[in-house]
Length: 519
Ligand code: NAP
Image (tube, rainbow, N blue to C red; front, side, top):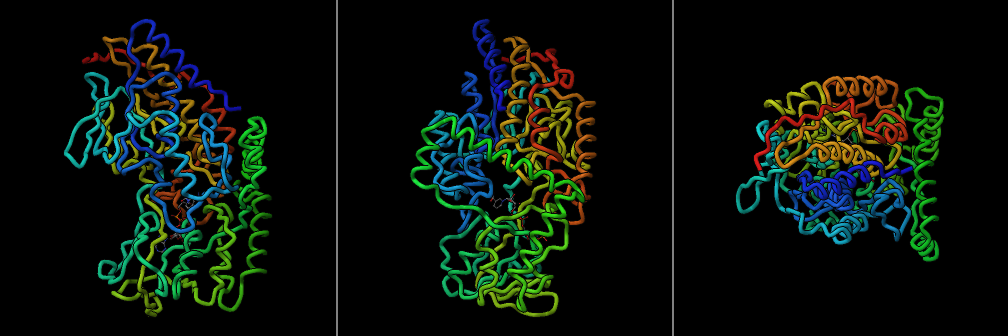
C-alpha cells in the first residue's frame, strides 16, 4: 500500500540529471521535527545531499523535544508511529512515551547521516521567492548574527503544535510563583506539597495532571469543557513479542497494517450525526456516568455536551482516577483573573496557588504566520490566507513556487497516525521535485507551482467534505479559526488522502522554465 512512487520518480530524475551533468534542486527544510527529518531521509534515499535542515532549537524532535512534561506519551500505537521507510522495530510498549519517540528522532539523524545537514539554534526570520533567479532566500538568525540561505526549493515542516498558547489573563504578570506552559515544563520546580493550579483539561493536561497530583499538596484544574476520555490499551511488550516484532519483518508489517486499519475504520464515527458516532458517544457518556459522576463531580463537570469527535477523543487510564482524588478539584467556573498567590473565578472565589501550569494548547490555525513568506510577484502568504489557511492537498499554495508545507492546513487527523499523512505528503512533494529536476538546467531556474484553479478547487472540495464531519459540530476546538473555518483537519478517510497524493496530477501544476538562473 505504501507504493514509493514519489521517491522512485525523484530518484530516477536525480540519476538522469547526474548523467546529463545537470544540477538537482537544492532544498531548505524548515524544522527538525519528525516531518523535517522524514523529508531529509527521502532526499537522501533519492540520492540528494544538497539540502539543509534549519531548526530553531538545539536539537531535533520538534514537538517530542518541546513536550517533556511528566506523563508525555503518544496516543497513537507505537508501531504506526514511525516512518515506513525508516521504521523503529523495537518499541518497548504499545503507546510509546516521549523519551522513546525523541530517541527515535535522534536516531534517524545517525541512521541517515543527517548531522552535517543540520543547522541547529537557527531561526528562519523570513522566506522570499526571488522572481529573478527562481530561488528561495531564507533570512536566518543565529546567536552569532544574521545570514542568508538560498535554495531552489523550500519545505516548511514546522508542525501545527509548536507555538504555545497562554491566555491573556488579567493579572497574570503579577503571579508571584512559578508558572509555565505544558510545552515549556520547568523541571527545576519541586511540586511536593504545593498548591498547583492547572488551567486547561485537554490532551496534554490529561497526561500531566495524574503525576502532578501525585506530587502536589492540592491540585485544582480550571476546566472550560470536559472531554470524552476513553481507556488506553497500553502496556509494555513482553520480551518475546518485542523480539518477534523486531526480527520478523513480515509480522511487523502485518501488525502495522492491522493497527492502521483498526484506526482507519473509526472514521465512521467522525461523520457528522452518524449512527456510529451516536453509539460511541452513548458508550462514552454511559461509562463516565457510571464510573466517574459523583457528588464532587456532577455530570455537567465530566460529561461533554458536544458531539463526540468534535474535539479530539482522548485516551488515558489515570485521568479519571486522578480527578477523583480527594486532593484534586475540578473547577468549572471560568477564570477571571490571576492574583499574586491565587486564581480568581467568575463567582469571586480566590483559589490559592503556589504554581500555575497552563495546559491551554497552541496557536494552531495561523500556521506559518510567525515567518513572513513572500512568493511570486511579491505575493504574501499572510494575504493569501487572509480568509483562513489552506493548501492544495495540505501541501502547496498557488503563487508560491517550489514551496511545500508538511503537516500543513487540513492534514491533521482525529482517528489515525499523522506520520501516515506526512509520508503521503512527501510522496506528492517528491513527484513535484521530480518535475522540477526534469526541467532544471544549469542555465534556467524552474518554477513548479500549483495552479490557481486547482488550488481553489481543492479548497472547495475540502471545505464541502468538512461540513459533513463531526468537527463541524457545535464545539470550539483548535481545528477551527476565529471565523469557524476548519483549517487543520483532513475531512475524510486517510485512504482517500493516500489515493489523492498517490500520483501527482501534472495538469494541476504550472511548470515554468523561463526564469534565468544566477549561478
Ligand atoms: P488542547 O487539547 O487543545 O487543550 C487545551 C485546553 O485548554 C482545553 O481544555 C481548552 O478548553 C483549555 N483552554 C484553552 N484556552 C483557554 C482559556 N483561555 N481559558 C481556559 N481554558 C482554556 O491542547 P493540548 O492539551 O496542548 O493538546 C493539543 C493537541 O496536541 C492535541 O489535540 C493533540 O493533537 C496533541 N497532543 C497529542 C498527544 C498525544 O498523545 N499524541 C498528547 C498531547 C497533545 P476548551 O476545550 O474549552 O477549548
